Image 1 (cartoon, rainbow, N blue to C red):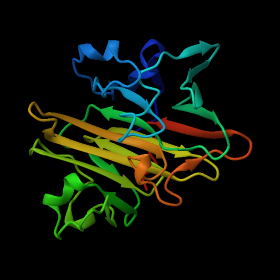
Image 2 (image 1 turned 135 degrees about the horizontal axis):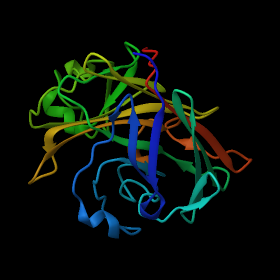
Image 3 (image 1 turned 180 degrees about the vertical axis):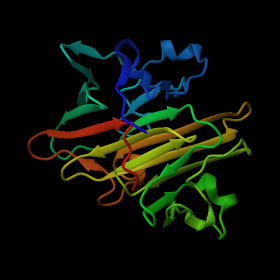
Image 4 (image 1 turned 90 degrees about the vertical axis):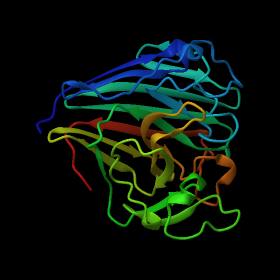
Length: 274
């Protein structure tokens, strides 16, 4: 597939959410009706409207899906910025030919630890598949326990196995709704999404001196109760855990003496599959 320009729309008034990601002649972001999203405020439980949410300093845990998605962002020229008290996050999105680059800066006191995820919920068909490096270490979270080929260790926050089938659970294909919902974190900074014979979307994150990964949320009608729906998340991350409280040494990003962490998210239809 030849590369084509990308178009991105964000909503600074409502948490800086990405409301549109168009590439290759299609819309990639999934959406659902969620009237409460517009009124979300710091401390609110997460309201899943789809799109791409900026989740920082955690995804699961407290605050639910982080502290940035509920706050108004402010635009200064090409840069959007949000002040979350303990930290400030800014981003500048540029379209560069056949790709888009989002440059981020988080400013906080040295030693501040965090997880960030580009919480992208994608509108994918049953045929969609993911390409990541074969054998990459993959952490599965407890909701996957009934689906594995082994018992879940007592009190373990995750279990680990190689991509694409940790614990015997095949994760590289989405498939039809089957009533399951699984979260995983893969130790790689790049993923390529294949949907049908031609549609491709590559997402990659780079950050010098910080841990990177790709989170996967494969909800095939298993979440939430009592009214589940289908939603599929492919989420480049800084860090290697959903919940900052679970982070071990090397699992979270950390602000250095400079007081800043910088990283880049790149999106393109010109996939270079792992």
